[in-house]
Image (cartoon, rainbow, N blue to C red):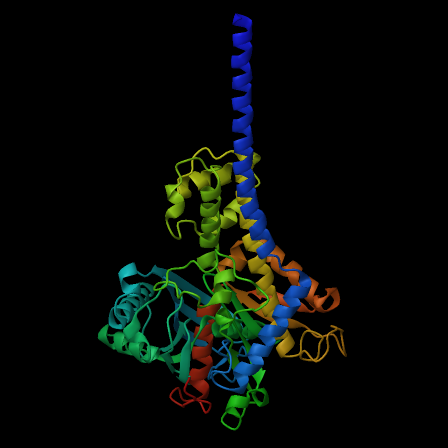
Length: 501
């Protein structure tokens, strides 16, 4: 009887162990199912990317045809010529595009020579991002004043380039009104104001005898620097905290402003592709879960799938879903509930970790998400999530670049009139200037983007396209444009294509 009793106990224990293993396996499978679902939703086969290319190119045509005709704004800048290497002298620039800005002093010599360049980075206090325009621009002007004093420079009559990387209706080469904020900014009373004038008034309040003579966004600044070094540069792309592009367009293609453009025959167009919403790409539940007030809910859809502000947050939301479906992160998962606690640099470090046992992944999960002792198989799943999000972002960015090449006839389809990409005539280089921490600092992202370019364009045509990184391109380009326009034309001349948006 005792033996029978012990046998019964053993059977019960064994059955319990089997049940627990089965339950654990079920929970693990639920977490894996979340990742597989994400992978399916984020898949971007080559045929789909080509459809994204065509959709964006069509939106670009529509945006050039009429105001409000497309979600892609196709804002016309007042830039109708680019630096050519003959600029000389000392010029200053301010580069504002996110929660930090840069102040630059650039000394130019003849023959496309930058003799000296000094750059200072400043972080903007959070209270100023949601404060008043006066407070924000006073802070920027004060930083410029301190920078000039430390550099031993003079402000007397110096030309100032201003890179302002938010949607603006350009009024002249040196002025433009803010259409709306993107990213983290929400200073509502600044909308509709001339941002260059706001800075000029702040410069006066801070005792500086300087004035903005060129107002551009970061893509135009990057294009200017790219063209300064290589006149085969036809476009510029930013892939960093945000994403956008600009390119050189023939005036006769800008239907909405025929007869009101400059006589140079070309104009730099600011695409504002962050607001593009590719119909071929289904949003995942993790793409749309952003705070309605702070993060422009449902707005800037393309940017939210690509740019550095959002990729880490997408991963966090996936991890949170995995934790809801299983216990693979343990029971202490409160850290996953904090929005934007996982940065994109941390996501990149997770994906690029090649240490034994994925030690770096474990460290990031513990330090940033408060998830200690995550087992190796779970760490591998975490890496997979970061890879899926990275790959989709990079491949969509590649498709957007090809859309610009297709629009200007540099992709082998005769501006999209043929479906087969073929090299025609003399082989010609096409250079795209590129800047942004996500592209420059994340090697896996670059690899996926370049791979997708070859897939879409084909090896023959892809070999003619060069992505050239521009260090400090947006700010340095603003200084170059300040130099180019200070000596060739009056700053206050209005754009002949000035149209209300």
